[in-house]
Length: 205
Image (cartoon, rainbow, N blue to C red; front, side):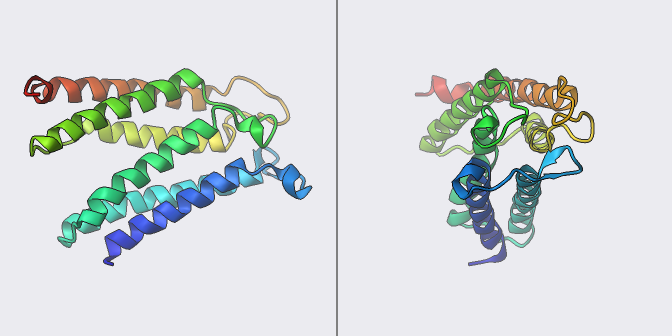
């Protein structure tokens, strides 16, 4: 297994660890809910670090695969799966983070529905294009969407720290919300552009 594929595999393992970390209630272990900086739940802080490490591997596995000419079928198959699991699983969990903790800010469900719905439609286009032996390239807005999603997710995991203190004085998490709203808007915009540029794929069905 080459280095890019190892990074992809590591990201998949990190996704599994991250999901378990965020979903298992402390009550299962009769444990307390320690915080860091008096504003962030320790478990979510660790989750943010794991998420960032996984996001970094997402960049480097693709970069190294192209630069070193190490593109493989394993990478083509596993890389997008790892990407979607990393982002979408955390988005879904943060719709109702109170399943494990209290006073953890949540992502509005409409944002998650729109972003995941967009991904399903775009993936459907790619599937149809693959059947026609076509490769549909992502646009720049798709890459911007990913960056904004990752920033927004980290801010939500950190409970909008350092901008508001949700634990001692809950208030509207404006910074996290703005970034998630931007990620949703750019996600829909990139999806619309993607569909517009590749509408011929559907017409040829």
